[in-house]
Length: 460
Image (tube, rainbow, N blue to C red; front, top):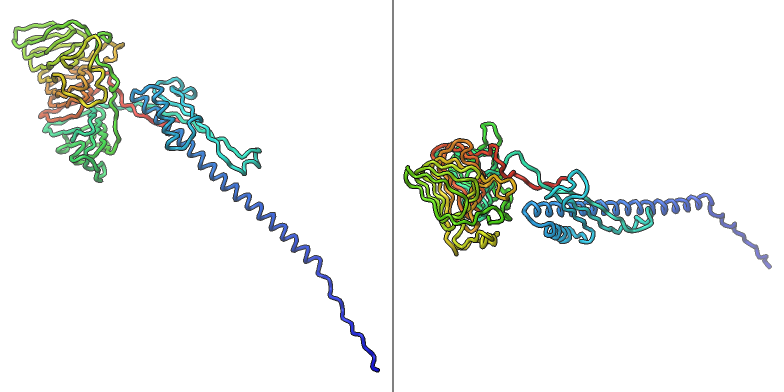
């Protein structure tokens, strides 16, 4: 009987405890590192989102301040400017209207209490879940502030053509030279070329047209559309930079809210008939009041200071000796009421109707006429004012010495033709303008209190 032989195997050795420990430590470290990296990545993402949203809120505040200031400088009420700015910010920037505060004028900062300036403060809640780790809440409150308002440019707008559809809005055909010691503004949407020679799309024709170089010199020419020949627009000196700026945007009528003259604003209600001075022996001392016509071809006429309302007729001065210190000529229709300024006060921005007869202005001889000078009047500084619905031309072709023709000409829907010589101290806000003089004419501000070139900027 054979004996059974027991066989034995050695037991497997236990795993190395040091290796297992290292593996566990690596896994723990990896988990911690990944967690930290994910947290950092999340924080970077949330911070980027926070910065982007903060910029959006600041942009909304900037936009609201600019909109409010632009409206104020166009004559809007505080209520209208505030409502429009809030709607603009909420519609285009997604900011809740309740979080916008608009101060008109600003309540803080260097522009505090200044009229026609706007201050906007804005807050916006932004959810950032990781922010709970920092301050215990997932909502961050973003704040922004902006201030906008007008700044006065060193050069006044001496020639402003308002009509967007007049093509051209400004035409210089010479052969003489027109020198504008200030800025020209052309609202026409005509096409053409910009200052770099690039095409400008617009209405058929040119917004501004100069037949050849040296016909028009100006500090700046701002055109909504394009021009025929950019190189023909020249500065006031040979080394001045090119004055032309196309695609410049639309400039609002600075007198859009100016009331029509009436009794409570200095108009005499007396009907003076008419003035006709047509012989050299004629001598007239005119008094302010209501006239049906003023026609001067000879003789001597002195206008006493005040407002001269011409109902239905024209102001025509083609000869004689004419003086008038501190006067305003207002040309309106036969249905004008001197007591209330009706129906002129309802013209507004409407397109003119032809329901009543009105006259224009023609001055072709040297005169000595200076603007209405009552500092308390809204018409201070104004020489010629035609009712907004008056589409008759203003023609000034007289040779003048400095200071003898001074004041603002406002003819919203009336074209202006200049062909005189010498120096005019005038500012013209008209429908469109044409220069076709054979001599040289300088338009300058001099010491006159004309409207300054004020544009709205973001200031803070």
